[in-house]
Image (cartoon, rainbow, N blue to C red; front, side, top):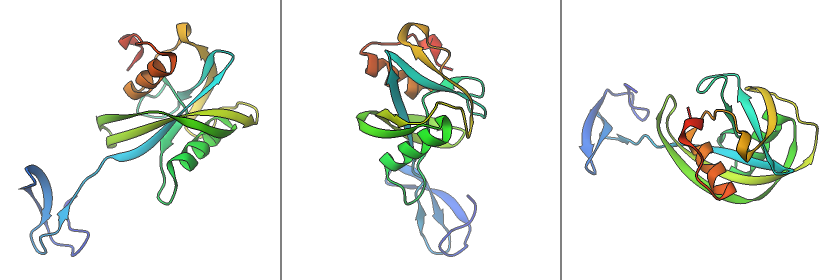
Amino acid sequence: MKYCSTCGGSLTTELVDSRPRLVCKSCNHVHYINPIPAVAAIIEQQSSVLLVKRAVEPGKGDWCLPGGFIETGETIAAATVREVKEETNLECRILGILDACSNLGTIYGDIIVVCYIVEILSGEPKAGDDAIDLGFFKEDNLPRLAFRCHTRFLAKFWGRNLDSSMHG
């Protein structure tokens, strides 16, 4: 970011609240850069969880929980239901929040991920949106996972620590 969104003036980096922040030279507006909110969903069926294979970076070719970024004007729960539908063709219902996790310094910047446990209401599983494949996996047969937070969510879901080699 080079220019102020308030007045169009040039931005400079200054210490504000003991942190480097972008500040407008003209109007002194401080531009805070906050983490991006995202969601993930755990869908269990017959002691297996549904994972999608990523078609895009980051983690292209690796597997992850269905999920993605929350859109403006969308609740966390609504984003979860939408992302599950887009990536798996499944209508789902929220059962509850499992956990939240921070992923710092990704290609999108810092991300906060909220993971819900959901149940399938209807539909036939079919990869869509930015997923090229999907499948149900048992705890002892997980493929390589794209995201550290997803590894953490599954570990909490199954009540154990997963091997760090499963995370890319």
